[in-house]
Length: 283
Image (cartoon, rainbow, N blue to C red):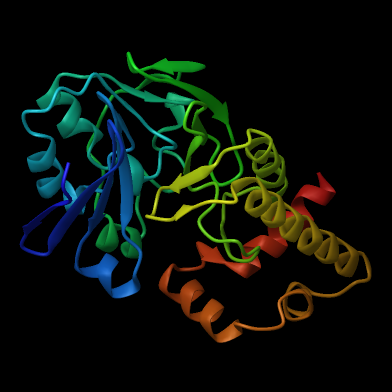
């Protein structure tokens, strides 16, 4: 399959086959391109892993039109991964699977803050079934591994034959810094190390990152989070304020962090990381 590109107004799609039957679909719109942060979904034979955001629903629906899709499996419930579940499930006549489907509207999805509504758009209403422990595409078998931390609904999918890890938002970058208000850094540490133990050869995440040397990268991120969390707790026991801890643990990038916190109304920031570590230590 040659790379495919589609456009509709400000929406854009690029699809490229990574291996026989495995297609990487990259979605973007005006705002995603401004910040360099689109969303990705993946065709694995006749299943779809994630379905992107509703503000790119026109091009994704067009690309999938006429294809046989047996099911949609979501790495987690956030609107940039489930935004088109409803329209695709109806159009393609396929079920949707999500871990902890009763939580599909939690973590800010039911009432999106303005920055999320502007960037990703309101997700379609959809029904989801509980995620199975294993998925068969007919040609391939995928293990489903719960990986909470970024979301309580989060899972990764591992295809052992090719060593592919479909990582969702488990690994978006290698740093340990800003997180959402509902994230749990300690759960993320466990999840990263669990995924590292799979021995994947290639990691495909939910925002276009394709990387090798997977186990090392996952372990290094887990180590960074653990180290930063340990510093936070130690400084908190010494009586330092959240602001003082923030300055000690994260030496650089404070202007960028302030900007992101302002844009997201405090939903995404390094302050959230500090608070989450303190809360977890006190619980």
